[in-house]
Image (cartoon, rainbow, N blue to C red; front, side, top):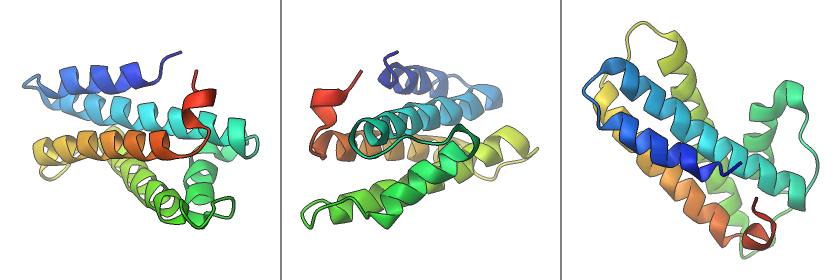
Length: 130
């Protein structure tokens, strides 16, 4: 599975003039980076438990216990950005009203792109991507 295709889909959905497509765009953007981050951790650090996968992925990056000095900042940033995107994904999936949905959707897409870029900069990412 090419998880980055979810981000491409998210951008297309965000261009549609409907609340439901904006909400779906946030979800697709989130799942793109969540799965890329998870696959990177599983290939380079440790398996991820399915029952707490979302929390475990972002906490592992935030803790940066496996990072070297050069990448520690990026690890932590991936964790913080990923957790924030996860919270927004939950909000758009479950809340009846989301304030400033259009602008938050655009920020979510930018955040997802930033996480992709940070992941690409981590050692081992390009060798192990699927």
